[in-house]
Image 1: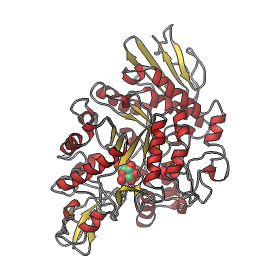
Image 2: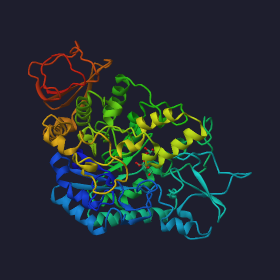
Image 3: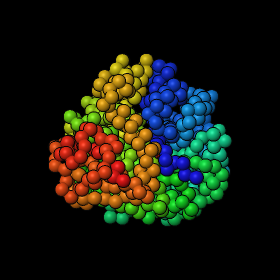
Image 4: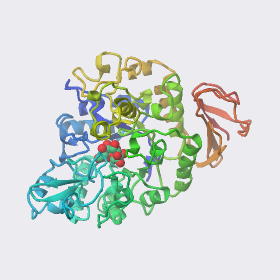
Amino acid sequence: MSWWKQSVVYQIYPRSFKDTTGDGVGDLRGITEQLDYVAELGADVLWLCPVYASPNVDNGYDISDYRAIMPEFGTMDDFRALLDGAHARGLKLIMDLVVNHTSDQHAWFQQARSSRDNPYRDYYIWRPPAEGGGPPNNWGSHFGGSAWTLDEQTGQYYLHLFAPEQPDLNWSHPPVREAVFDMMRFWLDLGVDGFRMDTINMLSKNPDFPDVTGAHTPYPIAEEHFLNGPDLQQYLQEMKREVLSHHDLLTVGETPGVDPVQATEFTHPERGTLSMIFQFDHMRLDTDRTHWAPRWTSRPWTLTELRDLLGRWQRELHGQGWNSLYLSNHDVPRMVSRFGNDGPYRVQSAKLLATLLFTLQGTPYIYQGDELGMTNVHFDSIDDYRDVDTLNFYREARFERDLSEADVMGMIWRKSRDNARTPFPWNASANGGFTTGVPWMPLNPNFPQINAEAAQRDPQSVYWYYHALIRLRRAQAALVDGRYDVLLEDHPSVYAYTRTLGDTEILTVLHFSDEPGPWPGGLPLRGDAQLLISNYGADATAALQPFEARVYQQR
Ligand code: TEU
């Protein structure tokens, strides 16, 4: 059964969705209160970012108890009410599964660090200092600095691919796998419908822990030594056998650095273990890979590059596996600011990008607020930022590398994860109706214009366009299963492709430009072409407006 191919997923960042207690932090009751909002939009699966007990060094991605709800978010009863409320509306709910690492406050780590012969010691990855002292190798943490921290008391280093407060679990130790599988069963018994698996292709590390060679920074990200490691597929097969195969779930693996051939291993209809993955090629498109901090850089990209990389995924996974379709999430800037135009063409370009997400092959993901066309935020002061990654980057760039305040803030405005994490603007009242208290992070100052109530009142809004696209995709099997064929392979500003299933052919035409342009000569429109949706309402081969998007049915 693969119901998830027809699904549309709505991603919720609970901290920033809706506060009902006035403490300035979103909570589970807030989500339950707004379930009708998600159901009316038309999504049918909710993905909840982590809601487990956590000291929040990385906003819940550092879990101290996998079987408890973070008190700021509510109680286990609140969680059950949310799950029941979702199911009553025909919505499924998937949880974030964060098992590459725990919090350093997790009982397992507290035990593990207490002595070298503690039974939990091997739940984590320990190494002696290098000869002459210092970390065992040069691997860097995603959040800056070494990926190793010395535990003074026991004299060994532990590995953390993220913050020092997020020690990596040792998946080669069988009791770790059993404990994780058991915890998964706990949530499945409660009735959850699947998992989004955080950094799932980082579980198996190169057992030799070699240095990264030829690096241009002291602490490089050792992707070649921890992505898709030697035992990864075996761990996932075991998870499938022990847990996943006993249920009908949506599972999506977050898998940076995976190509379509590897993606097939994860998602093949028979051999695979997961429903789908998140690939990252398009998240790296606009970055300078030679920079010391690639994720913080911006590089102009061409439409041909985007078309080529998306097309490769479309072709190679067809019939072989399944993909997810996303342009933003809680880790990256807002899609309209990054891939569209958040100035005069905000509404039109947000609609164009949505058209792309809903007409390609794969399961579309909507990140909260993208259906309103929310934009990046430009806070003047670093004091208004909250993300550990952003704050570490600021410190390193300003004080260790002496970059100017203007340069660093410019990079943060373009690339910080906090762009996506500003509280959800429900209406134009104080704090956008998100909280009656002081929000944990300021709202985007444009909330009086960009908010859910205003969008729902305006028939031309991005919101209503998403509403229509979701229904269009549901009505057209060709948009789910159809073969993808690209047209105009080299056109600098028009991305056009068809999806074909049986007798039906759907043509999508996307004009990636802030200037008008002619209808491309090489793009014949058949006599029987019928316009299914567009963001300007124009038809036939009329000239293309800035960021115009049209979808036709040709047969
Ligand atoms: O992200 C992991 C990841 O590979 C990156 O995209 C990461 O966000 C980036 O390197 C840091 O900015 C996942 C979660 O989505 C992210 O929110 C967590 O911080 C991270 O894992 C650690 O759990």
